Amino acid sequence: MRGFYVFLLAVLAHRTAVVGDEHDHKYKDKEEVVLWMNTVGPYHNRQETYTYFSLPFCKGPKTTISHYHETLGEALQGVELEFSGLDIEFKENVPQKQYCEIELTENVYKAFVYAIKNHYWYQMYVDDLPVWGIVGEVDASNGREVDYYMWRLKKFDIGYNDGQIVDVNLTSDAKVKLVPGDKISMTYQVHWKPSPMPFRRRYEKYLDSSFFQHRIHWFSIFNSFMMVIFLVGLVSMILMRTLRKDYARYNKDDDVDDMERDLGDEYGWKQVHGDVFRPVGNRILLASLIGTGYHLATVTFFVIIFTIFGHLYTERGSILSTVIFVYAATSPVNGYFGGSLYARQGGQLWIKQMICGALVLPAMVSSTALVINFIAIYYHASRAIPFTSVLAILAICLFIILPLSLIGTIVGRNVAGQPDNPCRVNTVPRPIPEKKWFMEPIVIIFLGGVLPFGSIFIEMYFIFTSFWAYKIYFVYGFMLLVFAIVITVTVCVTIVCTYFLLNSEDYRWQWTSFLSAASTSIYVYFYSIYYFFFKTKMYGLFQTTFYFGYMALFSIMLGLLCGTVGYVGTSMFVKKIYSTVKID
Image 1 (tube, rainbow, N blue to C red):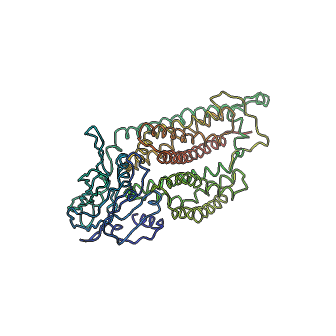
Image 2 (image 1 turned 180 degrees about the horizontal axis):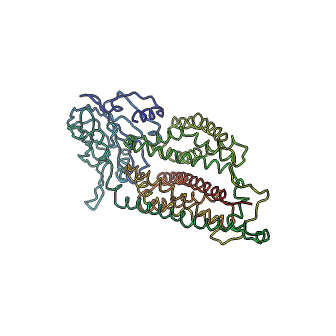
Image 3 (image 1 turned 135 degrees about the vertical axis):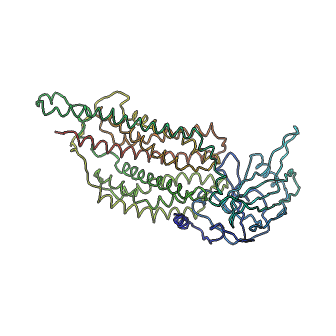
């Protein structure tokens, strides 16, 4: 399994990589250890990051290193590794040593003052272990004027165990007041110490177990599980009991004459049997969205499984790289289910549908990322996606996703493309009678997402906090369980909503079932707005655009996944009830 992940990252790497110590994490005495400087930015705006040397820091005297590597996932996440220039060797202590000097010219002074005012901190990496430090601090204790101090000493305490680095700690010390025209000597110190910690557990110190395994997290899982039991029981007892009564009433047809039938003994969902399987409007769009939803469900499941067993959260960019790889590799799923559904609906423009299904989600992601990218370029932020990464993504879409989607579409049309409806479709559509306002499709659509959102509400808080507030999400077992819960809740709720719709003699169930399940995303996006204003301290155009842009994408993807689950479950339900009842 570990070899699979190494292969996965190698496939996605778009820069030449030379295998070195940082890849196998094994060192010999006095072997080179690289200190990578990554990004710097305001503490409260996690995504507003800049390259470390965009601030006028100075580099160490060392200019060459033995290796450099970066994956596609790292590039897309704004990882900008630059060599620090500091000479560090395995198990070799370094006493306090000056490595460069910063002259506080007017521009340099203003840059550091701005960074300290906005609580800038920076990130570094030693053997793939993240290290954080703060640029400086503000001192307003004298009451008259504000003084700005910067830390000029970086003290590294590095723990090792059997030729491997298992712990890195940074202490910022020796603060110095910023005075225009002065010179600041930047120094560093390295202390190596043996550690009993095994290598496989070295990442545990970064994981906030008390936060993610809080009692409220366990309670939310239990609460969602009880909701599943309630809804399954509701569908099993109330709905099936109602259907049995309907079956009993409809089967009385053998005991009554034609005059009684003509007087309207039949009513409810059986009345629309000649229209319920009528081809839906905008079938290309529906088939494309359903195929994309199948695709997203497959990707979500596999990525969660890979992360649980492979601990991908411990490697920079590994989760995003895995998502891209799995999404491209599973493209036939999109083509198969989207193409087969379109064929069953009687569609003829299957190539158009295939292209739409394969590119609808990449197009949405790319357009959103393009807007954010322009803003990132304007801000000179590290989140700006490199042109080579854009070319790599374009190549994946054109040369992997499209061909595999084509294969899946051809297979789907030939294997599962024949209509299998249990009832004939009438030539003339039946008029839809008037009904109460709460039975209108638009009302059902908006109400259908309430319970699925309630089942994932607490988990959304933990996921948002992880992504937007410097916490590493690692409880993917919880996520897998919540994934199964939201699928079950969505299917049950959508079936109930569809039954009420059909019972009011409205046969427009296909789009209604999809949109009622997909409306969960609307509530998630509303919650993200609340989270932004009441749970974070984010500010600025770039961070705001980044947040709401990518939260919109997240909500849309969740909506596609839930909508597909709701549609598929409802489709099976509708075929079941209309295949069982006796149709004259």
